[in-house]
Amino acid sequence: MEQWWKNSEVEIKGRNKMHTLQLRLKELKGKIKKWNKEEFGNIQKYQEKLQIDMKRIQHKIIEEGRTKELA
Image 1 (cartoon, rainbow, N blue to C red):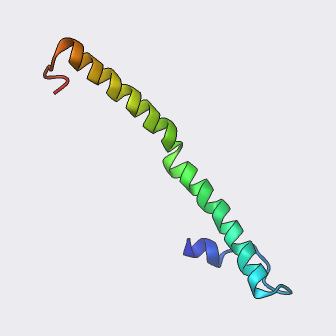
Image 2 (tube, one colour; image 1 turned 90 degrees about the horizontal axis):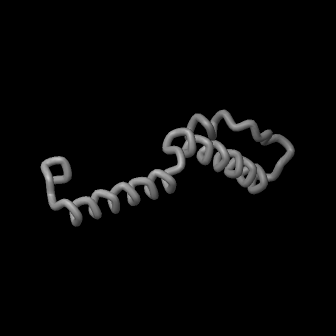
């Protein structure tokens, strides 16, 4: 993030400091969102898939009892 901040494309000249800060933060937010999606993907969908898998395994344990595979 430090490098993103230092390499900001926001032009500082001719702007007041608060406006520059606002623009740099907006730029940084976009970069963080992109990084998050590339690094972690859609965590919510992954969590939903895991919950479905867990329910399937729990149902199998109830129906068939514990096995070495499900222990």
